Length: 188
Image (cartoon, rainbow, N blue to C red; front, top):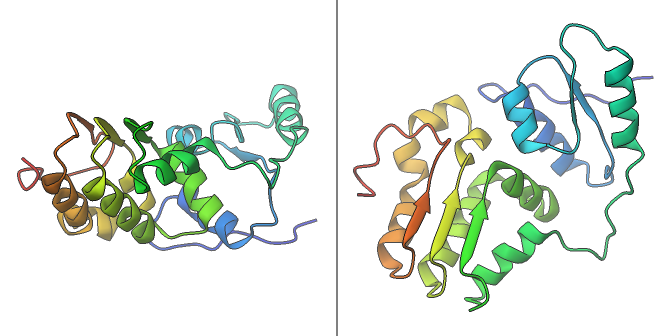
């Protein structure tokens, strides 16, 4: 039986629609995503929950979907590693010198903290600006959380990140891949 459905969000890809659904339904801890398209986005954002079915839902897809659903739900006491990483750079912890905010980590943090993309960007920007220990920073796939219109205005959306990086003296390696950035001259 169908009990609910994702909302169609104009200008966003399906993986973001599912992400927003999960953020607004925190009671869902175990789930499987079955789809025949958007493979790259789903595999990056939901690597453990996505089952790709090319043309038909065959026995192999069925078995993989079952194995995903049979996984133990995450414990409420367990804080995901990605959340601990963000907290570490927010607290200027000397033990956190690398921060990897890949699409999967961003999704885990957004679902755990139940925050929209703009709040996430603000938290990361503030943390990077004040952090004096982080040497490697990855912000990969952040644009996948934005609408097509926001992606076109990426210089505005990423402005606070660029400002934070200008004020940070410790970052020596920066990965901003998979963000559809039109112009990074502001950063340079």
